[in-house]
Image 1: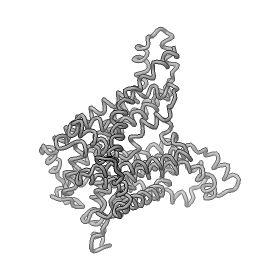
Image 2: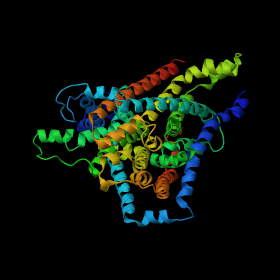
Image 3: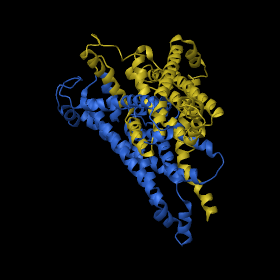
Image 4: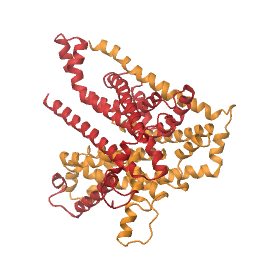
Amino acid sequence: MKIENVKGRKKDIWTTVLYIVCGLIAFFLMLPVFIVIPMSFSSATFLQFPPPGLSLQWYQRYFFDSAWTRPTWISLQVATATMLFSTLLGVLASFPLVRHKFKFKSPVNTFIVSPIIIPVIVISVVLYGLFSKMGFVGTRLGLVLGHSLLAIPFVVITMSAALKGFDVSLEKAAMSLGASRLQTFFKITFPLIQPGIISGALFAFIISFDEIVISMFICGLSSVTLPVKMWEGIRLEINPVIAAVSTMLISLSVILLSLVEYLRSRAEKIRGSS
Amino acid sequence: MQQSSKAKGIYLIYPLMLFLIVFFVYPLFLGLIRSFFDPHFTLIHYIHFFKVPIYVLVIINTFKIATTVTVFCLLLGYPFAYLLSSVSPKMSNRLMIIVLIPFWVSLLVRTYAWMVLLGREGVINSILIGLGLTTSPIKLIYNAIGVNIGMVHILLPYMILNLYSVMKGIDRNLLKASENLGANRLQTFFRVFFPLSLPGVAGGCLFVFIMAIGFFITPALLGGTRDIMISQLIESHVTTLLNWGFAFCASFILLAITLLILLIYNRFLGLDKLWGGV
């Protein structure tokens, strides 16, 4: 391993200590994610460790109960709309942010990412104040607008990284060979930044799908999302249905994260070969 | 060609700016106004916030928890980031998965998982009793211990990513040079590597601390009635007490504290480093 080249010829006691400590930290990081999965397949009627037997009863409860499927459907709709809306705004804005020099560029950058720095409870309360006047509380539109505030910074950051690695001379070459601006965009620019756009969109989707604090305030009684339903469930009783929902949410996160990683490695390969 | 694209391109940012002004700046402004008018101009909410002993306790408690969480995140994050930055890129990509999976799993799911682990009849107590290490369950939840464990777990990936981004930029030849000149590994670490990693330490601690003072879900589920943080105070004033003026006032105090810390950081270290200069 490279660590030996860097540190010296032999592994000394400190390397061993480092490995053990990091092993424990890795265990701490992964433990909660993996403990929920076996609990969700438990045959017990309450949370019990170790599970006395295996069963799919909690998944069955989830899929056949409209109190769970309705919030899931709302979350899916809101997350899809948030993804489309924030990707559109974020991708458009990232072009001038990366390519143009303008006054106040650095403060504008900070301003755009500030919704993820300032406490989400502050955003939730002031949005609730505004939306209750506009009649947006309890609507899916209100949720989409609120979630987009948190999703757009991730789209902009992902897109900016993609655009920074983009060789502008490729566009110039296309145009000097007679391609129009639009042709250049669709034939050259878009295919090259596509992995960045998709990654940003996936981030936006998962941020909206998992968002809880803004949703708690904005969703009202008519647009309860899946995380808000879970939150209410957790406060009443630690019911194993929530372990089943959690397992599905963990799977969704892992799948989306793998997709993003795949896109990233592919983009690196394309860039490396060109 | 280039000239015209510069003139045209800037318009692409306008839709986003319009959206942020209407749904971010405007509601913040509206809330700020309403924290001072109830319905006539008054400072009563702000005076209450700093005079009522319970609210003062909530602020102190918020800072106490945020500080503890930041310290533990640094203690756990530093060795892990160090390992990530010193193994081969292939190995570090693999280890990074351990950081990124919890990072992308919903905060609510992770908090729930800690309830399952730490509860009275939870996994940890079941194991301890099963092994005969204790006869009655240990109280690990609905107190400060639970809040701290849960929050450290949720914020640790942020700390590791911040530290790692600085550590991977440290020139390893400096370490070799130090060892060739006769320093042992501990000396090399403390006199060369550690000072060079300090910007990452500052960035990571700042990020974790700012996130921690605004936490709501985790203290609400893992904490007891004595471990209330500012966010919970705000939430209860909106949803149960319907005291909007006070909720807005507390929100702006929380916002002011956050901005103050960011300003101090910017003054000394430069904020643009924090998000890689977007």
